[in-house]
Length: 190
Image (cartoon, one colour):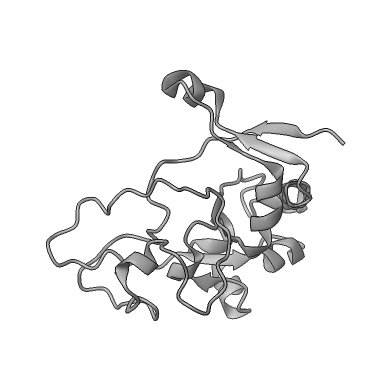
């Protein structure tokens, strides 16, 4: 079977940041880990390394921090759902319901490099996807990615501006997607 390609833009922002930085915000449960490990260094001895989407991610140092400020402090935590939850949803539910059911969890540093952001269009004034059309399409596309048959390349505009094309091959998606977490507007934002 041939491999198809899909254009997708991706932001160059630091993927390790899970929310707005604040020097006085409560520390996440795992923020006591050494900064290098929290920012994507190799896994601790004895723990299995989980692949990330971009194997040699270009992670920039945290910008705009005041001396002594912890880059992992968050004023507003980011809530994410696992691959299994994403694939099991029948209809998008509001964030509060997703939290009540335990289907979204706060960001943790071990999720770094494996977070996929999805924004959707509202199809009605009462619910973004009243018949589940967008959700089913997204789930079908993610399953196709996870099968390993689709490579994703940089948006053509970025290719023109930067003069290069970053491609994530299907084999990488197949290895990574089961370990990914998803941020979906309606489900992840309070």
